[in-house]
Structure formats: structure tokens, C-alpha cells
Amino acid sequence: MSNQLDVWKVSKIYETTHGQVEAVSDATFTIQKGEFVSILGPSGCGKSTLMMMMAGLESSSAGGIIDRGKEVTGPRPDVGLIFQDATLLPWATVLDNVLFPIRILKRPRRDYEMRARDLLEMVGLKDFLHQRPAQLSGGMRQRVAICRALILDPPLLMMDEPFSALDAITRDEMNVALLDIWQQNPKTGVFITHSIREAVLLSDRVLVMTRRPATVVQDIKIPFERPRDPSIVESAEFNRLCSELRGHIESGHATSQNNRYRSATSAAATTE
Image: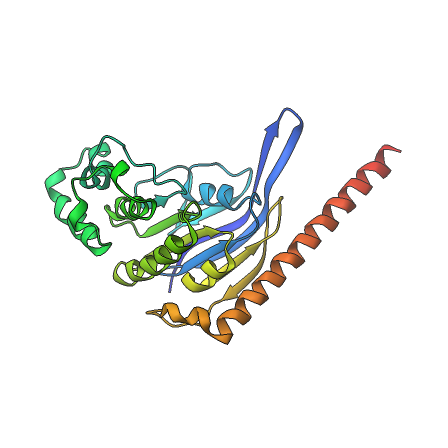
């Protein structure tokens, strides 16, 4: 299987009024075609920044990102993006929101309308085509956002904590829905989350990141077969993996703190 996405020694440094802030440091990994990979780490660690660089919406300060043999230098239409907020057009219907990328790219609507209707039926929204976002629940709005991201049938789908704003019950429902969607529309996927259980349920692999400056410290393969039964969350192996990942996150946090302490100590010694 050929590589889908290669991330090599990628770093991101922001210039602020208080000096440089390193958000991501020396991140290196490969995602194979057709894999669903979660990037797991504590809030504010730089996961979203890394995804934005992979999507071409942010430039890296160092390193390189190669997607299907081509260097990522900017945004492109062959990547589907889903964010924490569904970001739907409030004045547009559900169907028009799904077809919005077609309008922006000035492609013939008639070539994509049947696909949009099929996608909405797949996620259980065939009776809501002409409703507006304000008439939908949070979970329904995110289903519309997923359909919009899939309308161009992109080979790569990137999701930045798409269910984090939902209540616990709706979030569980959306995880199950995403398993079903993935089974029917297999893609290469990158999923940003700070939920350990979500990462284990959805993923083929989980990359664990440290606190800022974030780097990948573990790459864990999830052994559950697809199609994946949501009942695996009750299994001993599922809970063992969750415990293992929690340990890696805590270990990475301690390492990050030690590195910052050593850097501060070294800087103090230099100025003396």
C-alpha cells in the first residue's frame, strides 16, 4: 500500500509580542491510504495546528508534508474538512448547505444534487432537506457538515474535534454514526480529539502528542476489525487500550514538563 500522507520533522513557531512560541516540534509520522488515524492529546497541545498544516491551511516553520507524492503548499479541494462548529449557512437549507462547495467551485449543481440527497439519506436526514440549521439539533448540524465535507468525494477527510461541543449522549450517537459513514464511504481519515475512548473506538491507529510544544511520542495500533461493533467499548481489551493511552499521555506530560524545566535551567545558567 502506497503512502497517503507523510509528515516529516514538522514544526510550527508563532511570533508573538512576548517572543516566539513553539506550538509543534519535530512531528514525524506516516498515514497509509485508507487508514483512520486519531491524533490524541490534551487540550491546547497543538493538535489542531498540526491538522491545519496537514490540510494546507497553515504553513510549517520547518519540515515537510507530502500528500500522495506532492508537497502540501496550500489548501486544495481534494481534502474534506470538518471542524468543532458545523459552520453552516444559517439562511440556507440543509440541501443547499451540503451543496455549498459546488457553488463556490462553480460546478454544475445538477451533477451533485443526487449525491447530496444520497448522503443526507445515509445520515438519516432525508426528511430535513429543506430545513434550516436553526431547526436542527447539534448532532444533526454536524451530520450536515459531514455530508458537505463528503460531497466532492475527497480521498482525505480531516476532522478537528467535530463532536466536542455535543452533549455526552449525542456525542456517543455521532461516534456510532461516523463508524457507519466510514463503512459506507471509506477514506483516509485524520481525527483530532482529546477523548481517549473516542480515539480507540473510531481509529485504526492513535498518535499520542505531548503538551506544547507538541510532538508525537507514541503510535498505537488499534486491533479491532471493521466493520466495528460499538459494543467493543465494554470489552476488556478496549479498556486496556484506553488505560495504556492514558498512561502514555501522562508520561508525555511529565517528559514535556521536564524538558521545559531543563530548558529554563539552561537559559538561566547561560545568563549568569
